Image 1 (cartoon, each protein chain N blue to C red):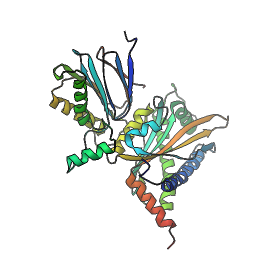
Image 2: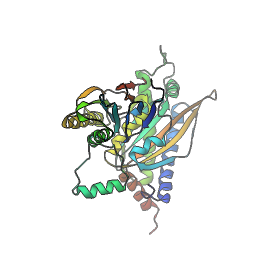
Image 3: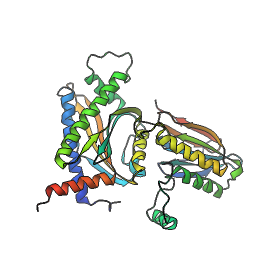
Image 4: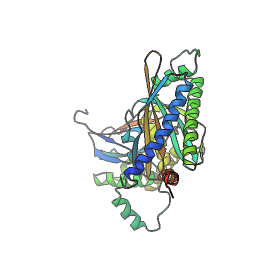
Amino acid sequence: MTDIISQFEKDQLIEVINIGASKAATALATLIGGKKVVIQPPEAFIDSAEKAPAFLDHLQEVETVVLLKFLGDTPGVMLLSFPSQSALKLASYLTQGHKKQLPVLDELDRSALCETGNVLSGAVIASLSKFLDLNILQSVPDTATDMFGSIIDAVVVELAENSGVILAFRVKLAIIDDNNETVPGQLFFMFEPKSTDKILAALKNKFTIT
Amino acid sequence: MNMAAEIITINMAEMAVGSDKTLIRTASLGSCVAIVIHDHKNQVGGMAHAMLPSRKSAPADVVEEARRNIKAKEAVAKYADESAIRLVDEVEKIGGKKESMRAKLIGGSKMFRFLSGDDYGLGWRNAESARKQLLMLGIPIESEDVGGTVGRSAEFNIETGLVEVTTVI
């Protein structure tokens, strides 16, 4: 379904997501005490909602996902997803000195991860709403740990209820800590066409010289 | 024995039918609901992985809408109610009889608390829509594993009529 948006428009959206993701990565690096955070360029998926899971891999693996909704001019969702080991690692950076009996995420860890989602999406929204002159708000975050496919399923279906087509952007990221250990994760942004239309219109507004 | 078992994996909004020696698998059920139909007498059955409860609004021109959907290659099992009807049809085509059909429902969970807004959420509505449609078709629901906050995988063995549900946490 390449007729939904042109290649040029797709590139524009990827660039906008790249700005947001870079801000998020910077915020994450600051939050966890100056560790290195590297991100890859965003990948875009634009097709009917039911094909979205095929775009992703590791669907059977357990991941911990922080989910936030975007409200306002461009409704959509942001997902911050980490394999379960990565999530534990990230939580331990955030809750320094917190002793645990079992290597599973407890209430404090989940709260810390939610807060990470909050901080990251705050950075994304601040940069995008300033850049595009749009009014974007964020919901409270929530976490879930489960089969990655099931989580994606629930999120995609929620979007699919309003629109047959979804636009998903994935940014792979990795935290490199002081011992040179890599903690991989992913950042997702998903929108309905209605929202991306608004982003494109805002871009056009900004860069058209009259 | 399942020595020569054929394994069919279905994704979101797909369905499959088969006779004995067929295993139908679907992974990653979140708020989606898997409808399983089994005819124990004729040893046939099928599974559908439905995404949404029902079409949002009835289109003004049904024929036109259907034509558009076919043209757009719309997924066969997107809506729970429609896919229940379609699944029963397909199972009948390969030799099933409505009288001896039994249904099972898997999935329909609520992965995030605030996603749908209300108390029930989309998963619950998916399951409810499938239940309603199966009731109208006169097919009893044998068992259910729906709701909660867990993701599920399901594997349906048509020979035994058993569905194995896997969760990871």
